[in-house]
Length: 371
Image (cartoon, rainbow, N blue to C red):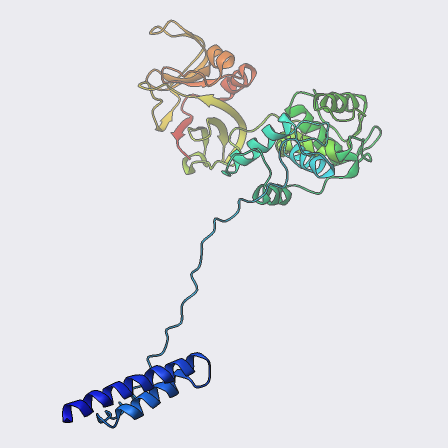
């Protein structure tokens, strides 16, 4: 009988759960309520377990997700000017390169092969990457080394004349001296801008494809200065250059009479009581036959001497150390420093050594040294 009751209760509970679930499906009560009802029904047969207390442990904070940086390649810089570009800025580029003698006018306004070659040369000279294209670094260096070109220069027009025929000034003398350095002007320089200067300037301008006027404008002057050296005082005064200029006299040469031979400057100075009377350029013995150094004295003079050892002419020979002498050398006069002596001090100025021969006496000092 007891067993029958248990079976009956189980059947009733099952029916209640089925019924409540059906009602919940139609939205009359929630499934949680239905579950609670089923639980209530079941409580008559079995005690409910106490609810588990909620955890008091703090929740683990969520770690923020860091942004992932994506590295993108840096874009290549764009050139300011490259082959094929045209315009006024190209003319400025060409004019600036022309100031440094990298570009030969006229300015075309087109980055052509000549312009690219000029840019490449400029870059290579300064240790830049040689591209032929003008980037910021190339442009900034070029701008720093040149002045802003004039409109006349950029568009191949003759600029205002700075110097022209009839002018008289020391600046004209300098222009002539510079033109003489590059074989456009010949003879003595002076302060007057005459016909010879006009023709020299015209030839210089034509050679460099700039407007041929015979007048010196800023562009002509810049090109001339870029191709020549600052004229020396000797050049401006039409004096032969002093080979010993700037070199120090040996103290042994400052007293009495001395032929002072300086190997550092390839010079011989005739000095009397500390005053330099004559300066000549000289050369010395070749390797293995070096000219001896030290203080000596003239022991023998021979106007038309011929070497018995080498069978060579030694005019105006002044012997100072055994077979070594100061004398005129036709080979030095013809070939310059492309060669050397057998130990003697060679002079190539015939008239000067002839005059010196008459002045030097037996017993005069000879000092051979490095300054």
